Length: 455
Image 1 (cartoon, one colour):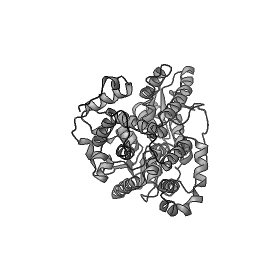
Image 2: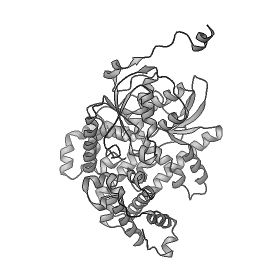
Image 3: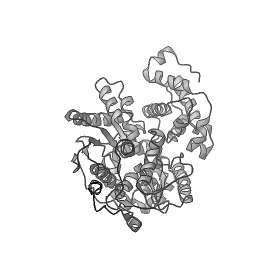
Image 4: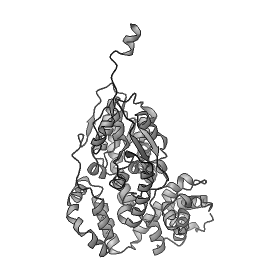
């Protein structure tokens, strides 16, 4: 793609980066076939290629934000399916995030839009605030239809997404170290997360149990918190940087105490963000090197277990039919594709793929609140495809997908690591109690192999 930036514009490092990204685009249009919003709407401006042109025009014009640009960038899910398809390697992720930052700084939003975005940014990243908001949601349910009539569709969507009942408190809560009872093979840091702690704390419990059984100490660092993804995709770059720095500081303290083999992230949207800390803080002299190190250590839980730590034979075996839903942030953002499926198969489950697995379910952080119509259309499309394969349950790697699909596919939806923990000796995951009868304990051998050989 030909660009027309002036030398003065290219002196801005952000513009120079955008220029390099734009020049890689060859207008081929392969991205349009895999873009969820283009598939739904058929509007070129709602495709990656169309948004690239809009962003190019904005930057070349000195950063002036048009209503057209705002509308179509807001509709982007950042599912990054376009990036796994693009033959030219266009870094669309960083380009669209730069555009979001420009839009946020321009201030050209209605009071309602600004209110909703500030509400989300000031509630979701804070577990105690978010827990209180979820507990208050039932008070708003009788007013959902009225809220929609008043044009407050975002508030209505937020209320409808809130679970009716919050799960019990996690077993492992707060900063500290879960020390393995087996011979220690590794030490890792776990990102406890923010919204996930409230919506499904059992995911962290399952992660810790699964790792501890295989000789891995799990550290939850004091001072660490939200990864920053929620605010970053709202265009709030400064807030996202503050969250990132907080985590880099907290994790750097743990790194200084001894060897750390990985930073484990079990919410794939957060994992994509943490793996990008090196880029986010690249121009900060105090943080750049440490942030790059953090990004190098970041691993999705299935990526870590699947590549380094053989789990051995499962303690329980089942032929339950599991539809694996590949979260966009895992398959496109992190390029972790085969490991979750392979781990589920090794654990004894019958894994089936979902048609159109590359198409987003519509969760995408706060997207299902800010763009409820498109998110609902994508959710219904995904739900139909899941029902086509007739699974007993759905496994995925992101809390957003779990929240988006639960209650709409007629079967339980849970995190992959919860199933793995169950198969390797953990308790029945919350919501799977009716399926427990289909899980069979694998008998322990009466004599160890070494004894048998000696005999």
